[in-house]
Image 1 (tube, rainbow, N blue to C red):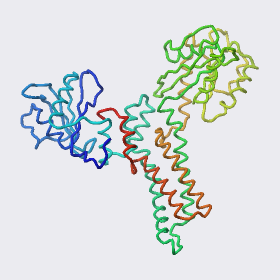
Image 2: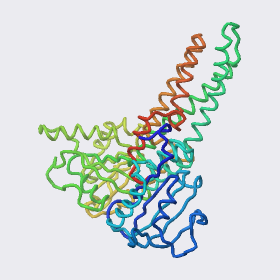
Image 3: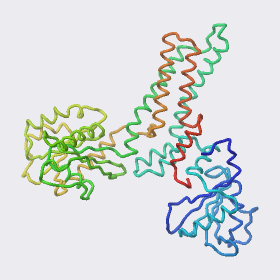
Image 4: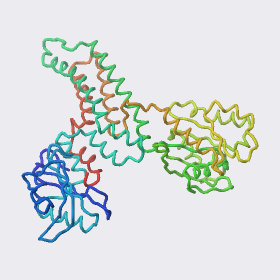
Length: 468
C-alpha cells in the first residue's frame, strides 16, 4: 500500500471505475500528472482545435480513441484539473462502450505509455493524502458504495460530509488546548507551577466523557442500521412462524409443515421496507424436546433473541389462554423490559376465528398485531409496526457511529480519559497524566487520520474496489 514517502505523485494510475463485465457504458479513470498527456496522445476530438493547452476542466469532449491509426472506439472524455478533482490531481475519465475487449485495449494502450494499474482504493487514498478528505470520510465512501438501504445511505452521506470528523476534531481541539498547558507544566516541573486550571479541566473531562459515551452508545444502533435491523421471529411450534417469514419476504423461503419441530436451525433473509433494511430470522419452535438436534435449534433461538433488536412473538390466536399469555409475559419479561429491544406480539391465524377472543385485551399493553400469515392478511399492519418501531429509535441529526474501527478507537479514548480523571483524583504526577492525555489524543486522531500507519491504511483501502 502506498504512503507519503513513496513519491506516488510521480506516476499516473488507471483503472476501470464501473463494474467488471460487459455493459452499455464503461468508465476508465486516470489520475496523476500525466493523465491528460497520455489520454490526448490517443484521443482525436471532433473539435480539431482542442489541444493540451486550451482544453477546459470539467467539460466533456467527444471523439475517437485511436492507436496506430486504428479507431478503438468512439468515446467521451471528462477532464478534471487538479486540485479541483476527486484526488486533487489531474483526473481523466474515459467513457467508452462496455465491451470487455474495448476496455482492456484502451487500458493496455495507456499502460504502454507509462500509466500503471491502480491498487484497490488508491484513488481515494490519494484524495486522503492530498487533503481532499480525512480518513473517516474516505471510509464513508466505501460505506456509501456498499449501502443497500436509505438509512445506510443517509449515515454514509453524513459521515462523508464530515459528520463524525467535525465531532472528533472538536473533541481533540478541546483536549489539545488543555494538553498543551499540561506539557508546559512539565517544562517547569522544578518550579512546581500549575498553568492548567484543575476545576476547568474536570469540567472538560466530564464533557468529553459525555460526548464519547454518546458516540459509543450510538454504535449499536448505527451497526444494525448499516448491516440490517435483526428481527427474531419466535414462538411455539406450529404457530406459523415460517409462514409469517414467507409472507413478509413474499417468497417461499422457509419450509412450512404441520409437523412440529420442522425448523431446526435459524433461517435468515433481508428485506427493505420504506428505506430500512430488516434482517428477518425464523427460529426453531420453543418447546421441551427429546430430540438432540431440535434442542440445538432451540438453544440457537435464544441466542438469536439476544442478538435481535426487534422480537416478534408469534402465537396461534385461537389456542392461547389467559394463563398462556401470562406465561409468555413472564418468560420474556427481560426482553419486554429491555430498552435496547422492542417486543411485538403477533396473533396469527385470525382466518380461523369469527372474532378475537376477549382475553386478548390482557396483552394489548404490548405492541400487538393480528394477522393471517397463510392468507397474508394484515401483513401491511405488521410491516407498518416494524417501520414505526425503527422511527422511535434515536435517529436524529446527531452523529451515529457505524464503523467498528471508529467504535474501538472511541472506547480506547474513553478509557484513557477515565485514566486521566483517576490520575487527578489520586494526585498522580503530571508526567503520567500527560501520557494518558496523549493516548486519548492518539486514539481520536486515528479516526480522522491525523495519526496513521501503513498497516492501518492498507487494511482500510485494501477493502475498496479497484477504480475507487
